[in-house]
Length: 257
Image (cartoon, rainbow, N blue to C red; front, top):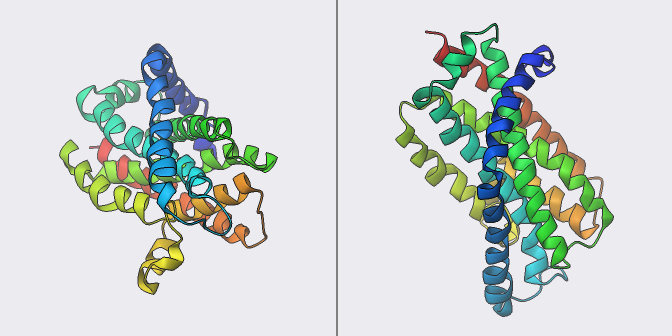
């Protein structure tokens, strides 16, 4: 994704097309975003949390809440740029219709990534509102989470679209979610400190984007911001930069035949 394609009006028109479709369905899509985090908080925080000792001076509910913001953004961006993008590309032929106009492939890909990041912002923002209502946000620095949600959305949207460009069929996404996204959900520090894992798994987890997003959100929500968090931000930026380029390459090969 070059700076030129990022600023391209055509790329934002692709984003706008997805936005217009979403606005027709927002009443259907709004409530699950509120209900799911409430259910998880009740089950994990009040249910399982009753049997868990405080972690670093925090209740279990306080510990997992920021991670649920990150995981919601991850799942939203991932589903949008795998199943959603694949359906638009292969079944609805939306990309073919767009490319019949003066819009370039780079604009289509950029618009899709931007839209995935927007969905991540919406989903993560909803969870942030929910945990605020539960009294789990302890610092006004949590407002910065909204900006980071968009960055995290770019990371997972570009990663997911990269996989979409390689996927031979829609059923291939089962492997992506089962072997990559779901392990991230459980082993990125959302439900327990990573220090409890064996050293090799701690190292693997450190290289995953969700771990760094969880670290950043937890620090901002709890008001425990330190300079070493700059490494988490730098790594997330680097990961995003790599995959926004890679998804452009594979999607161009997929769409130009």
